[in-house]
Image 1 (cartoon, rainbow, N blue to C red):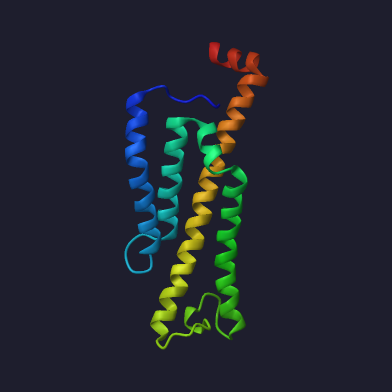
Image 2 (tube, helix red, strand yellow; image 1 turned 90 degrees about the vertical axis):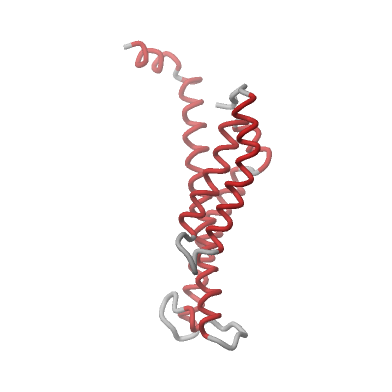
Length: 160
């Protein structure tokens, strides 16, 4: 499904709202350790902003901006960040995700814990955003191929 809505109002509001939604998603991710929200919520907001652009401008427009491989890479990289921080804590004789044991050159343990939590939030946010956009791509591409390749089956189901 590469078609887009040929509606000026939808395109205008998506053009105006999408940067605000994406900026708000980044804000939620970075302030997750100190306020309500965090990686999951921020990742959902970031993914929703990107999907909003895909709905308004079409899938081809968004795939020219960020290819699906990059989205999948971000998903895996987010898991790598999460696991890497946990493994680093284990290597320095702490528990998994015991942020105080991270070998960072800071004087206070609270500052080290804050940076560790922020790293985890970034990793979770990247993973959630990547998985949401990837699921959207899979649903759109599968739906488009199903209608193109098996049109008679879809027409039979819809005609009942």
